[in-house]
Length: 393
Ligand SMILES: Cc1cc2nc3c(=O)[nH]c(=O)nc-3n(C[C@H](O)[C@H](O)[C@H](O)COP(=O)(O)OP(=O)(O)OC[C@H]3O[C@@H](n4cnc5c(N)ncnc54)[C@H](O)[C@@H]3O)c2cc1C
Image 1: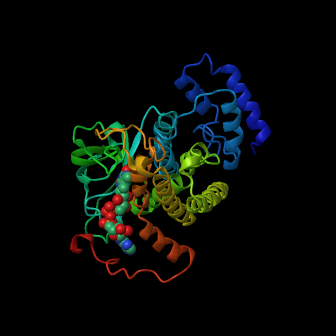
Image 2: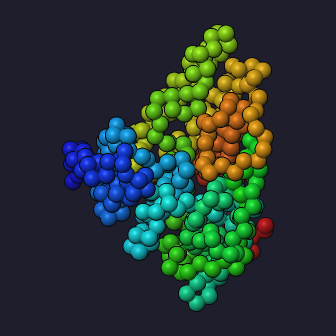
Image 3: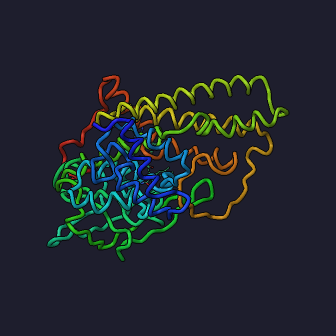
């Protein structure tokens, strides 16, 4: 098994052969991937060395100290956090070889075509249809709230392939080419003024069967891998102390003593401790994930993340008083990355509202924790054995 010393040796070798100061950024990232130092827990030949996931920090620390470029994880979050583990879990060897390297180095951005106007929390009710035609599938339907669709090269897509089966069982999982002429991406403006997400219309989009992930009709199971990982990637990101939403408000507190009050001080201290506990719990969760896929505890992390971001950004607005909600720019931006903590206090306050919706609403995650962690009785599900086509919609 590859240990820390071996990883340090390989990292030094990578740096010697590709000095960051004189090597093109993309060339460096490709060399890092090929050396198995991209995500060390991935298999050899696919950017990893089948090493324990916890050892990634060894590589990251050495590379950071040497001034090596990173792959800008915030820009390619959906690819790294959701598409990649799904491809690794269900993709064929050919799919893994084709998709993982350009995904990790950031040459190809991914988006997620899951939610529909009538299927969000109840995702399995989705109506986008995929019909087999020879070696291809023809896809028609509408998706919504698709983050980064305007910059994406590929999408992970779930579609209904068998309307005669109950809703969870007639779904299939695909990789969709976002450059297909049948893909129409239209901006949706958010409360922040930006259009970070989109509605996506799919008209006779052709997907080769070779771009199917998992078995026909097994898409719901494949999608669970994506969703479990999504919650961890939103709520359990690796961040340094004060690296999240608590950072800017702590900075304002230190730099602007004239804004302080005793009440706000007490609340800030409580939230600072909560944020640090959440951060360290995320570290522990990532270490547990060494053993396999994340379980329902990822939902707990994401719940805490949403609550904290909303409370902390609310406190920051209060602390700043009149200037708190001033907003720098209302023109509709089309950002290339999702940045929860960027820009000013007003932006952070507004953007954090979406944290309790994206990646599963807090109510739905509470249901998951209640059922799968606490063992409470599940919600009544009357549609489990009814064909999707017979459901009231
Ligand atoms: C910023 C942002 C980015 C997003 N990015 C993407 C993306 O890239 N790709 C994608 O596919 N989707 C994306 N989404 C969509 C997101 O996953 C859905 O909005 C979410 O799952 C909720 O679905 P819905 O909007 O249809 O609301 P609904 O499901 O209609 O929910 C409405 C309300 O009812 C509550 N509710 C529903 N069911 C239950 C229940 N069983 N018990 C208790 N309460 C319930 C919900 O909590 C909510 O308050 C994004 C959303 C946001 C806000």
